[in-house]
Amino acid sequence: MPATKRTFALSVLPKFFAVCKLAAGSAVPEWATRGEFFSITSTNEELSIIAEKELIPEDLREEASAKAAWRVLKVHGPFEWSAVGVLAALVSPLAEAGVSVFTISTFDTDYLLVRREQLQAAEAALRRAGHKIHELETVT
Image (cartoon, rainbow, N blue to C red; front, side):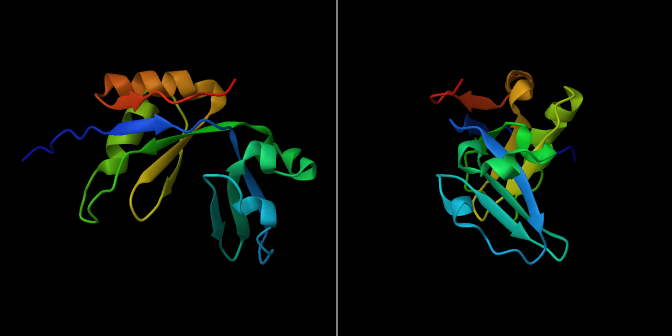
């Protein structure tokens, strides 16, 4: 039986974000937990932080990964834990359009990070796939 095509509503968060990498075992810096959206992941290899670009200290902004501005698309959830194909329905049209994506999943929903310069292409690809993009205040 073929899978049902899944479509979702998304919103673009109004800030620019950056991805930072700190050494494994580093303490979580205070700036990393400010703002309306942030993500912190610690592994044996690194401490990864996604935060509003303007909150990241200058010395970390010079790192290659933090120089790029990312935009965050929030998928309107929540989803059942048994939901299948949520990310596939979102990242497949982006891959077909040549848009690189970084994903974060939370208890209730998913977030897609795309480079600032690829946001319009990402929105167009998602709309072509039947997804709805809700317009929020954007930054320049």
